[in-house]
Amino acid sequence: MPTPVVAPRLRIAGIVAGILVALVLLLLSHGFGRAVPTNNYRPLLTTDAIATGCFPLPGDARLDLAYQVRRDGDAGDRRRLEGQYDLVDRDEAQRRLVGSFTAVGFRAAGTEGDAVVLTKGSERVTVTVTELPGTSADTLVRGTFVLDLPVVAVARPDDPLCRDPKSTKRWGKQ
Image 1 (cartoon, rainbow, N blue to C red):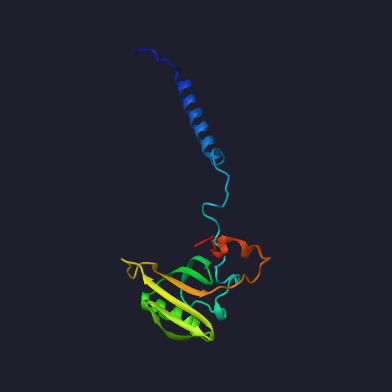
Image 2: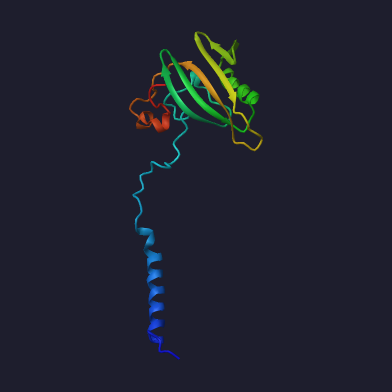
């Protein structure tokens, strides 16, 4: 029988040392090579863009459906708020959006294409709802909506929340 190149005791000691080094590296690896967290990749969820009160809806309307505001901004003398609605079909979303404004005194004044026009005195709001293609009862986001609103000044100009585009969804020019 040939003589081993490494004595059995040294071989066992080497294996044990290798296992110990591997365990130490595993225990300490969480601190090696990691990027510094910046909270920009997946930031904390911000306050709802409408609930902040920074740029309120006409009549202080509150939307009566599950939604996300995607963009909000002024275009000339009108404000355009774009969002997505969840869990309901197009007709129900439109009914709830229109109901959110009739609950604060607006009345239906007809339609313009696919948009429902609502008025309250000289204020005018239009609601356009579009269903996303290929959605089903299992789909969370079912469609989009656009609210054409009167321009409103920021309610709290000194509040940092009202200057944060992540909170207000006012990303600049639309």
